Image (spheres, rainbow, N blue to C red):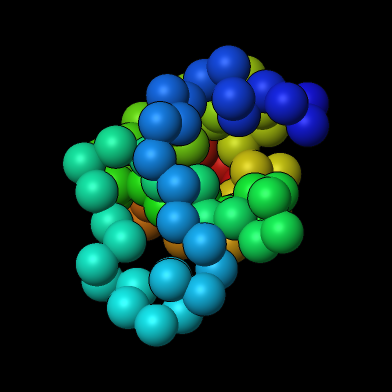
Length: 87
C-alpha cells in the first residue's frame, strides 16, 4: 500500500517542506501536491473535493466505523456521504 498513492493521484507537483512551512497558502494547487523532505514525501495537499472523493471511495471498501476512527471523521460526515450508518 505504500506506493498506492502514486497510482491513484497524478502527482506532478511537489514543494519542499521548507517552502510549505514558509508560505502554506501558496502551495495549494488545483492538483494534488506532494510535500517532500530530503527527496521523500512527508504529506500531500489535496483539494477539499478530492479529499472527500477519496474518502468516499475508501468508505465503500472499508468498515465505516474503522474509517471514522482512522481519519477522525464526524458522524455528520458519515451520514452525508454514506447515509444513515451505525458506527
